Image (cartoon, rainbow, N blue to C red; front, side, top):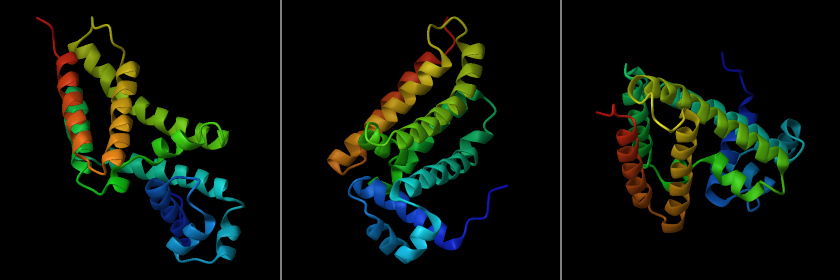
Length: 201
């Protein structure tokens, strides 16, 4: 059961998710967050001691939100783990119909900017991304056992590769201000996964 969050705290978390994905950690100020959230600075300091503490809270909030999104996604109802992995990629492609800041990853955005300057944020992002990979690896291990028992790849290595393609694609989508480069990359990713997850004759 999800914890009930105070409305003003939730507004601050949601504002942080949007602003950091739009303009990055350093460029996002407490004043910006309060303005976007529609709350006072006093309310901010009632809930959080600093911007870093708020961002750490936003990372936890993001992880819960994305876990719920992916657990409830249509591909999860597919019986075959191979279909679930391909369905995951299809689901990620469908999300690209949103605006660029809405489909990019908070964790990937944060870790690129803060990995040296804010170790607590880096660690929180690493935990979140690694947990997502571990969930994919569960299905990938089932795929390997059923279809590719002799394959050289491991479930974890393919999970990291999937996320590397996604995060790199988000960077190019930001550079181009266009999701089409990301869409093309995910089509290539899907073809690659389809190839390695087949029974060899």
